[in-house]
Structure formats: structure tokens, C-alpha cells
Length: 237
Image (cartoon, rainbow, N blue to C red; front, side, top):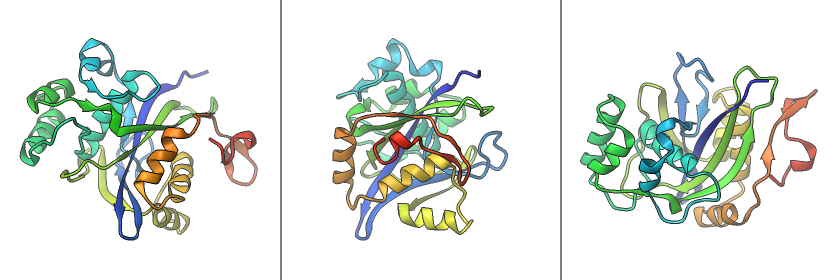
């Protein structure tokens, strides 16, 4: 059995007059995993996300799981869409310059935080769910999903390398486009969009996330849909 890689993903949301929108990115067509799929920012937890240096960069109340997942979630969000959950307001030009250097390999994420004279605002993230890829799949992930309000005074933009076509979109619109075959989504993303679509404000969504229990979800085969949530977890995960 292939052991799953630990990963972290962030559903970043903003309020609009017509309801919540989430930020999504299209993975590169050259990607070996999920090419051309629309996803939330995220990726694997790496060695740089653990240890004393990473832990020292975290401020505020941590979600109830390993700190490396929180660090990775914030790092991946900054790399992929340029949004940084920080303890201070950062000049837009400085934020962009730090991201450019990071993506070019000139800075580690920890060094970028030092250069920006800030730390990670761990309290900005709410732990939402945990999904594990079934053993039958050739690539497996143990993914921790978070939800967060988009940082103020920052603009989201795809990195144009691993991800493209970044956009803010209402969850129901994303689901409708997917059903029409115009917006490629994988099953876990669809299920998370369905849950987020039930909320008309970020305050309500964050309150729900803070209070809900975390049930680990491992999808199972289904004759009709191909894959499904285990019956006991449907509607409660």
C-alpha cells in the first residue's frame, strides 16, 4: 500500500454583495498530477515546514493539528496565489518582490517572512476537514483543508508556473460550470464547494468551521458516481 503524503489546502473566501466567492486556480496542463483541474491553493507538507525555525514564524492560536500543516498551508498559498496570512499589514510592492524572489529560489519562505518583518497569523485559518486518498489510487494524499478570509489589501494572482487562470468565483457557479463540462473539478473539491455554497457570509462559514467536528474522509467506490463519501459521513464530515 502506498503511504499518503501529508498535504494542506486553503479555501480562501471573500464577501461580495451577492454572497461568498472563493479563490481557485487551474493547475498547469504540464502537471503530472491533476493537470488542468481547478483547485484551491495548497500542496505537500515539506521538510521546511517543520522544526524550530518554522514554529517560530507562527503567531496566534493554532488550529488543532500539527503546526507543520498550518505553516505549509500559508506557504503554499503565498507561493501559488500571492496572498499572505500575516500578523501585519505589508506594502504591496514588498509583498510582490518577496514572492518573486521566493519563486525564483532566491529566498526560503522563512527568509521571506524575515525580509517582510512579519510572522504567520495562524489564527486566520480555521481547520475544516481531513480527506485521505483511497489505497487504490497511485498517488495518495492525507490532505488537511482550511478555510480563511482573504487578507485585506492584498491581490490574488496565480504564479503562472504551477498554476494559471486564478479567479474569484461563487461556489454554486463553479459547480454549475463543472456540471456543464467547462470547469474541471475533482471529487473532493466538488464536495467542499457544495458545503461552502450553503453559507451567505464568511463570518457564518468561519463560525461553522470553528465549531464543527473533524471526521476523516476516505472516499469509496460507487457504482453510479464512481466515487462517494462513506454513507455514515455524508452530510456530517
